[in-house]
Picture 1 (cartoon, rainbow, N blue to C red):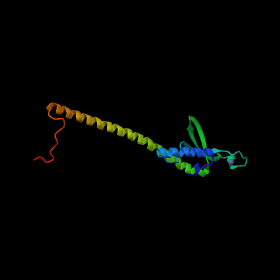
Picture 2: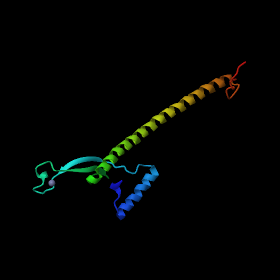
Picture 3: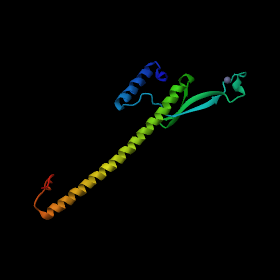
Picture 4: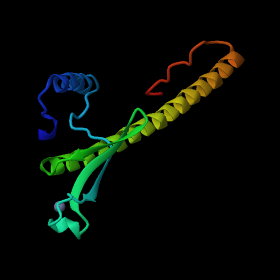
Length: 145
Ligand SMILES: [Zn+2]
């Protein structure tokens, strides 16, 4: 992960917090959010080929932080790494959403199971109340003679 190897006190502080989160939640460490997109920019040099064309290709990530739209330029040296990270991050977020949905489905099935058990227990109790001779059903003889 070359894109995240900055050296400075702030970078060290950010990395410390990053690995706290990675360890605590078992997260993949290379997650990168936002939208990776290509734009073109003219460098301004009058005799550069970009003066007539669409400009030099420029990659950046658009994301929002605290409700504000931010754009972070992606140097070409890190482009393939960041591209892979963004694709992986989307897959990871999709997996989290799917897992949350699955757990809710499982909760619904578990609740239904409990309800069925309760109904079955109530039906048994009604039967025993009617005969009024035992609290528990008699064990079933596995080999009736
Ligand atoms: Zn140019």
